[in-house]
Length: 292
Image (tube, rainbow, N blue to C red):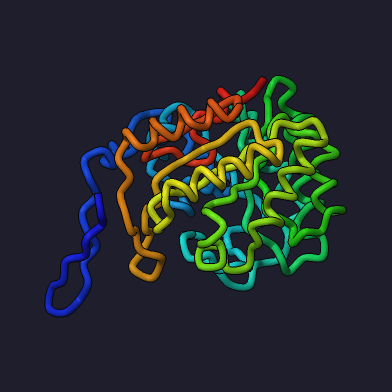
């Protein structure tokens, strides 16, 4: 289905989403509980900053993806709803606050992500490692997934995260090679593959994700899936790109659920251990299932 654009008084109007992209409004006791904890402990979540369509489902189940190192990113990717600008100073008490909140929420599998902090010499790696350590100190039974940036290819910084050995380390390719410069302005396709290769070679489950609907062809998606598999990635997510605001990249196509199902079958044939593929799939969707 093509995302045709209607006009009104010479102003573009975004096309309504198809039925398969409709989601329920977030409600319920558990949702309210998580929201209160996030607010009380001054936490940031990618659920809110990224306008995730699964926020109601995940928060209703008592889970959330925490975003560390603030909520202002030093990069300006064309798809992302997280604010871009000059971040505030690093909060040395953030790792303990996050760890205490994980315990308060009773989270069994915790997903941590962050904004890009290219303003820091270590890219935020020290806070990353300390957050993982603190969560483990206070939550002995909790497993961890970390959705990390590329640290600008500084492998010593990446190694700090690898050394604390979360069960899963994820880094999203986001799009196909041809569209990388458009979609991820300050990122590099091959650098992301190298990040994932180093994770896999360290014996940690490597995970990545691709958004569809930005103008890529099926052949390009298959090529990127093969690149990820060759780099050692064992867990793959495929989801529909949704335009956060009129200032962001437009959706060129709403991908039908049958296409996502077909790509999942293709990925499993390639040898991925898990493939989450669907219009509403996001990086941390059903993340608890991806632990060995």
